Amino acid sequence: MSNPTAAILIIGNEILSGRTQDVNVQFLAKRLAARGVVLSEVRVVPDVPKRIIDAVNELRAAYEMLFTTGGIGPTHDDITSECVAAAFGVPWEAHAETFAKMEAVMPPGQFNAARQRMATMPRGAVPIPNAISLAPGFTIGNVHVMAGVPRIMQSMYDALEPSLPHGTPIAMQAVYAMGVMEGAIAAGLSAIQDRFANVDLGSYPFRREGKGGVAIVAKGTDTKLLDEAIAEASQLLAAQGHEPVQGEPD
Amino acid sequence: MSNPTAAILIIGNEILSGRTQDVNVQFLAKRLAARGVVLSEVRVVPDVPKRIIDAVNELRAAYEMLFTTGGIGPTHDDITSECVAAAFGVPWEAHAETFAKMEAVMPPGQFNAARQRMATMPRGAVPIPNAISLAPGFTIGNVHVMAGVPRIMQSMYDALEPSLPHGTPIAMQAVYAMGVMEGAIAAGLSAIQDRFANVDLGSYPFRREGKGGVAIVAKGTDTKLLDEAIAEASQLLAAQGHEPVQGEPD
Image (cartoon, rainbow over all chains, first blue to last red; front, top):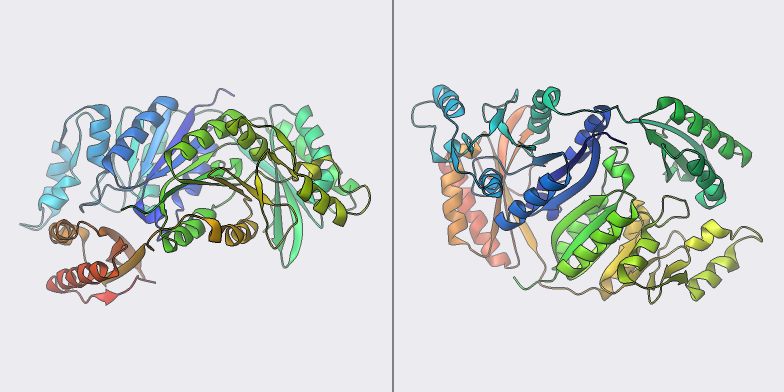
C-alpha cells in the first residue's frame, strides 16, 4: 500500500531494565493506524549518545516519519535533544521563544540551567506544545521528539497529529471462537489469506477463564474486503463446529 | 561492565498495529537483569521475511544473545522459524525427535501439515521445551526462538535460563519523594552521578492521586555503591524539604 510509513524510537534505560512497562507504542500504533500511517518498526535503545544518534539516523532515513519518546526532561539522563541535534549535524541552542515563555512563568531564580535545557533544541526545530507542561517536544525534519511520560506524550501527539502526513485509515476487524485449535484451521486460513492479497490476516490464540480460543484479525485499508475476509473466517470457524463471535475477545 | 549483552526481537504485526500490548519485554528484562545480562536493544518488526532475516542477522552479530518472541505457531503468519533458518543459511527441516513426539500424542489424521510446521526447525537447532504445549521453541547459535504468547514464552525462558551465559546480577534501588520537581534537583543529581561512575542513576517523574513526585533509581552490579548513591539521593530530596521514601512509588 502507498500509505506513509513510520518508526518509533524509545530512548529508555527504564524499559530495558524492566522498571517500566512501555505503553506508548500501543497508543501511537492505534493513532497512526487510524491516520493511515504504517508503523513499520519500533526500537528501544539505552540512554547512550552513540546509540541514540545512530538509531535516529537509520530510522529517519528508512521511514517517512520517526517518533521518539523519552529523554527530554531536565536531568542528566535526558540526552535525547542534544543527540538529535548531533544526528542532524546542527547546533543545539536555546529556542528563543520557548526560553522566554518558560522564564516568564518561573519564580525568580527557578529557571536554572537544568530547566533551560528543556528550552534548548536543535537549530531549526519547531516546538510541539503539550497541555501539561510548558516544556515542549519538537519536530526537526521528519523526526518528532516527544516525552516519555505517557500523558505528556499523548498530549504532544494530539498537538502534532494534524500536521502529519496521512493515508487511508488502516482498519481492523476480528472474529473469534472458543475451543478452536490454530492447527485445525491453519490450512483454511492460509487459503483465505491467498484469496485476499490486500488484507493482512493474523491468527492469535488466547485463553479466557482457563479455556482456549483463537481470534482471527483482518487488517487493511479496504473495509469491504475486511468484511468479506472476516465472513470467510467466520465460516471456517463454524465449519469446525465452533460458534464464531464478531469482534475481539475481551 | 563485562556482563554479557542481549537483544530482544519481537516479530509482531499485532504489536505494530496496536492490537496487542507487549508484556514480554518487561518479563525478559527483569529476568535477564537478575542473571546479570545487559539488555541492550529491543526491536519490533512486522511479519515480513526480509525484515526478520535482516534483524536476526544484525542483532545476533551485535550482542551475545538474541531472544525472539512470536511467529512460531502453525498458521500462515508464523514465519519466524524458516526466517531464522534463512538468516543462518541452513536448511529448514523436520526435527525428528520433536516430530515423533508430536505425532505420538495427536489423534490419527490430526498431525497435519500446519502442525508439522511446529516440528520443523533450522538444521542444528536444539528444542526449547515448555510446560504448556508439545510445540517447542529452539536455540540455534546464540539465537533463542520463543513463542509470543506470554505464558508459553515464560515457560520456554524458564527451561532455557540455566544454559544461558550470565554475569553479576544487575540490581536496582530506588528512593522517591512527593512534591519534588525534577528541575530543582537536576544539578544535585548530576553531581551524584558524577561521583558514582559505576552506578546508572535515573530520574523518573510520576503522578499519584493527582500529585507529582520524582523517583530516583540506581542500577548497577555493586549493591554497596547503590546503597551509597541512594543515600546521597535521599539527602538531596530531604534538602529540598521533601520526605524521601525508600523504594519505588506504587
